[in-house]
Length: 246
Image (cartoon, rainbow, N blue to C red; front, top):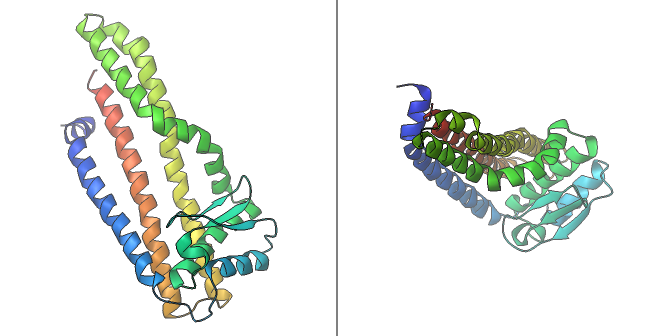
């Protein structure tokens, strides 16, 4: 049994395992944040205070810090240069809040210094949005059409005609989404690295507090690893479906 046969026949089983792992990773991320959201930092700074101090200290003066609703919805928007902090981060003085705020500041600093992977990720966003939504659908429709043409004794048309074309387009645009997930990994890891370095060097957190922030950010990073792995598996599964037509 070859590689594509394994992916084809055991793809669903592998996908279920990865789904379970993703759920465990997501639960661990929430558990880690919840744990350190209950531990207040000795410096008394809120997430917003810490973010403002970090941005000012590292020369980022054109970013606006905003409060947004929800939990763990924190993000940095490079389009309007806003650093958006959620309910559990903006006004909280917890270790988790300061860690997450520092991570988002890491993204703002990446944007400010022109971090190359961050530029690539931003450029991939439009294609990734389209690819993740329509790529798998087009690929499956293409495979169905190839199968129908094969069944109609027109195998050559199935492999080179409209079915193959639709399949190829679906795989191509979904590959943009996969690439986005892969590029996201170094971007997120670098943002966390910058955050922890800043928190330590600037004395915002130390000792067990810094270890707590590292735990929160490490757990969050694993969710991106799981998302990338899931996207790769989906791509391989789609390709294996067409491979079985040969």
